[in-house]
Image (cartoon, rainbow, N blue to C red; front, side, top):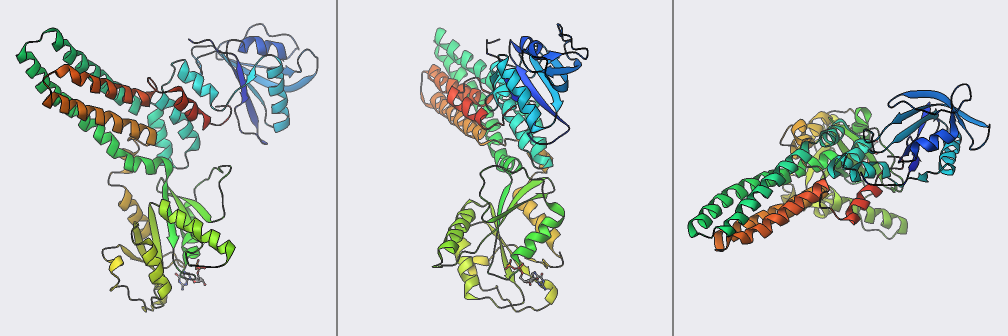
Length: 460
Ligand code: GDP
C-alpha cells in the first residue's frame, strides 16, 4: 500500500437534493472526522464501527456551532473504494451546507481531491486495474442500456481477464524461446520456432478479433453520429421530432458543448444516436449563415451515417443534386418523405450516386416508415446482437494498444520464420507484453494515467 495524504470532496452532484455525500479518504480520515463529528448527545465519537452508519452532528471546527445533522459511515482500508480508510458524511442535500462541511474537513487537515482522485487511488493501490477504472467513468457517463452494460462488463473484468491470460501466455512463450539459447542444438531451435509460430499466430488471431470488435464497441460506448441533410422544407425537423417522440435519451449536459446546430440524442433500442439537423450546406455570403454551413460540413465529415431527405411530392432540383454531390463519398441512406401525399413526382433512378443506396419511404408527419428507418440503422452497424457487442472492446485507447501488440506478435512470427537465432523473437514478444500491459495499467506511462483520471468528475 502506498502512502498518500488525505483527500476530500463532495461526491454527489451539487444542487438541491435529498442528501449529499462528502467523502474523505486517506490515513487521517478517522482523525479528521473525530474533530468535527459528535453523536446525538453532543459527545465526541471515539470509535466508528467498520461498515456502520453513525448518527450525529457535524460541528464547526473547535466550536459548539452545529452545521448539520448527518449520518457518517466508515470503511476501513484496504476494504474500501480507494483501498484506504474512507469516511462518508451523508448530509442534507443543499449546495450551501454541503460546501460548509467540505470546508471544515479541509480545515481539519484534508486536501481537496482532484478529479477522479479517489478512483486513481483505487488504481494506484492495486484495487482495480486501469480498464476497471475507466469503466467507472463509463458507467457514470452512460446514456443508454447498452453503453451501461458494456461499462459494467468491463468493471467486472471481462476485458481485464482476457488481457491477463494473453500476457501470461506471451510470458510463457518468451521463457520457452529464451531457454533454447541455453541448449543451442539445431533441432531444438527448429522445434521451438515451429511451435512458437503456431502459438503466436493463435494469440495474434485472438487479439485481431478483439480489435475487430471495436467497430461496434465504439458505437456502444460513444454512440452513433448521424446527420440529417436535405434542402429546406423536405421535412428534416419533422423527421427529427418524429424520432424524438418516443426515443429521446436522458442526456447528461456536457459543459462546453456548443449547441448552435441542433443535436438531439435518441435511444435506439439501447444504442445512443446523436442526431444533428444541419443548418444547410449551400454557398452563401451571409456571415452568420457561413459559420453554420462550415459547422454542418464538419459534422458531415465526422458523421458515421447521413440521412438524406427528399420530398417525394416535388421534383428533384439542382439544390438536391448539389447536396448529393457534397456527401457522395460518405455513408448515407435516402428517405423519400411525405409519402402520405401519394404524389410521386420525384425521380431518382438515374442518379449514379444513389445506385445501391438503401431507399426508404416515410411520412415524417404521420410517423410512417420510422420503424423501418430505425431497423435499417441498426442493421447497418451491428452484425452481432448488441448484447454480444457490449462485451467487446469499446475504448480507443485499448484498441490502439491491441494494434501495437498485434504488430509485435507478427514481427515475432517473421523473426522465427526468417532468422536462425530464435531468441531474437523474444524482443518482439516482450514488446507485445508491454503493449497489453498498457491497457490494464501495468506498463502505462504516468502522463496517460493522469490524462485518464482528468476526465473524471470531482468526487469520484
Ligand atoms: P425542414 O425545413 O426540412 O426541416 O422541413 P419541416 O420539417 O419544417 O417541414 C416542412 C413542411 O413540410 C411543414 O409544413 C411540414 O408539416 C411538412 N411536412 C413534413 N413532413 C411531412 C410529411 O411526411 N407529410 C406531409 N404531408 N407534410 C410534411
